Image 1 (tube, each protein chain N blue to C red):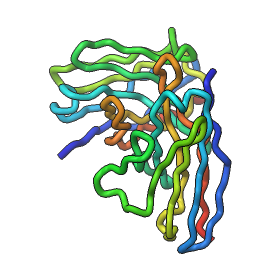
Image 2 (cartoon, chains in turn purple, yellow):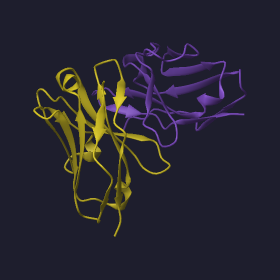
Image 3 (cartoon, rainbow over the protein chains, first blue to last red):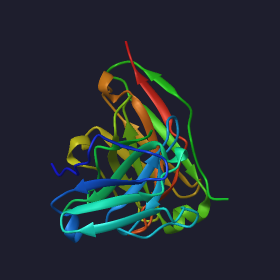
Image 4 (tube, rainbow over the protein chains, first blue to last red):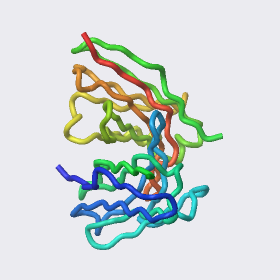
Length: 107
Length: 118
């Protein structure tokens, strides 16, 4: 079955930039989405259509796409950004799939 | 206010069935699809399937076909996830969310804990 691969963890100091990658063969042909999840909470949509930000999401969160890899970038990381982040897309039959998740730790 | 409110926690025996509900505001049912996602303890998110409440058309990944049924009652604006032949590895928090094509899953229910234990 189709998989989206993410690094298990990323560590970053406050004010620095965190980059989380997500790779998948179908990504050139399918939009990607990014979700933030904090312990005990439901996921929260952070990026849609590869790089668009929903209303209310801080500008420090951005998304980009290049070939089979998409990237979530957090510029000027804050302590409150510590969370798990999941990419999401679809396979060639339009079945949704989530990445394995990346834990962002703010040092 | 846009909301999706799920039913309460469940404890089930192996081999039994569970039905989780997700009540949404009426405008969600008329304009969005409803999806179901689960998260086992300490694990990632797993997509379980989706339904178009207006047409009633539902589908799930092959892994869940035959064991998961997703339905929607447009008169009560409530979606349902019905799972049979429960196993211990079905222990998870189950979430519903709304999705509109290419705009992502932007409103989520609070989650429903399902524990499968003998």
